[in-house]
Length: 234
Ligand code: IPE
Ligand code: IPE
Ligand code: MG
View 1 (tube, rainbow, N blue to C red):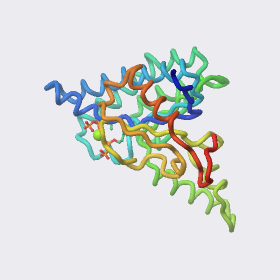
View 2: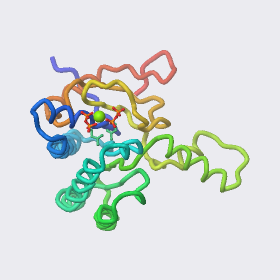
View 3: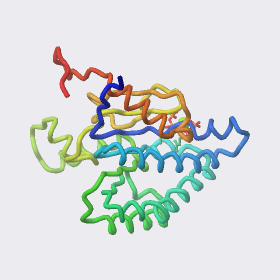
């Protein structure tokens, strides 16, 4: 008998392995990233079908600026195209769209494309699609600390910090999924990950499809979330 699947409220993906996916096929890394965008779209569809409330994708880290300029340029060109071609469609479906990270460092045309989407999505109340661009958890936490210092408060609690993160008011990820077999967080949502379930999948990101998504839900459903207690708390 099929066990009942638990659907996470918030699922976050560390999209990794585009380069290796391409290398395996003797293709340029750029092609891997293009296929990575297709996988991202597939995962948005799966999350919506499953009834996930919020999905986060780690698309570009604060450390990814160390990559060759040509790759960086190709990535942001893809982000702009993705915004024009697909995010605009998601906006029409009623999804709430957000971007977390320091967008001021992004190419001007990409920023313009993202702003257009944010403007159009105002007032939507569907599934939250959150894309991390020039995002780093340490950078996010430092910004929060500086905001708090500037406010002049003398005592800080966990809620105060949470309220100053990009994800203020939103649920922490129930599960963080990383593709391509790497078992690390690479500066992703370090504060919010305190009690996230971690799932590491060997498949490269461009290979993520309906079957991989189902495996993830099955694995997540088996996890016993205790939050320090002695029994499962859902
Ligand atoms: C993930 O794939 C995409 C980004 C980090 C932008 P990678 O480009 O890291 O692929 P690998 O890890 O080199 O295979
Ligand atoms: C993590 O992937 C960042 C993103 C998915 C955007 P990386 O490929 O940059 O991570 P490392 O370098 O293997 O830790
Ligand atoms: Mg990588």
